[in-house]
Length: 448
View 1 (tube, one colour):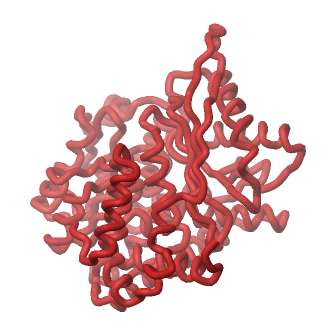
View 2 (cartoon, one colour; view 1 turned 90 degrees about the horizontal axis):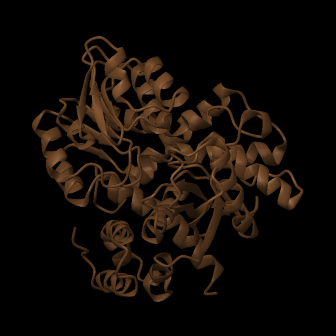
């Protein structure tokens, strides 16, 4: 991807020079700046006032140690992060990720993406992200609790319902959110909507766990309809088997699709008769087991080692829902060769840049993550609203709001692309639409 603007090219060079060891962040910034070239050409004041420069630099970077004790009494020390990237349109909002791969580059890329994703929802929330290189897998309940409490002992100083509202992400589910919220409540002696993804008994929202997967399918459904296509009668492949993938599978089936493959970090399962979602939920949500258990229990299902090989399974619609850069060029070529006509990202930046280019060159409908997976943060913002009102909506009310948000989001991205001569390019449209709302707010504030 080349940036067709001299100033933005120079800005990209400065980003790389300033933080040379942050490849994920560089990738995210390059993708956005490539889309913004026509905006920079049409709106020179955004360069003159330094808006572009400010947008690639976080407002605040917080890094801290997290000491915790295992069940044998041994002390371990992990690193914790919170990147408060941009608060131009609202309090920082974005998940916490607990995974061994977490580092500053990954958290920065996620916070940068979150800024535009949150803007696209139309809701008043800024962008942030956080996490730790702690791995909850293989840890006891008590060890996870002690880690979460230690993590919050530092994080609580920097967050609040009108300042920064974290949520969950990879490795941070309802269990971890409960421990984090409990510690925040003890430290601050207050009950506020400072975290989202909470349990329903203490301020959580109905439809939150379904939101990212459902929202992904609502966005995809709009994209398909505009192209005269549909989930109905289509074969679907979904990578991952966590929260996003599970509920994308559920909604895709409700919309008439047949999901035939899902994966985890070890490999993937293929079921020609269609994935049995109840069995997936039992294995992944209840037992926290590996997906190979599915093939052991379901007659006719196959298990294959190597999760990246899932893209060799023929399908009409592919929904990558696992992690960043999981869909490489080879996978894109396999999907195109096998007749895939739509790819919509459920994970954050799951397609490599050359894979994205291949999809667009082949005419495959392509929905970028910052647009298509915004359903989770949208319902997180709705949870914040319910907490502020001391009120809760029904599942159907939240789901209806989510569907409206994702439908509007699709049309805003599509219209922005067309406005700048890039009709049909949802990557550019999402970047432009998300950027303009943030940039115009920053212009209104003046240089500070």
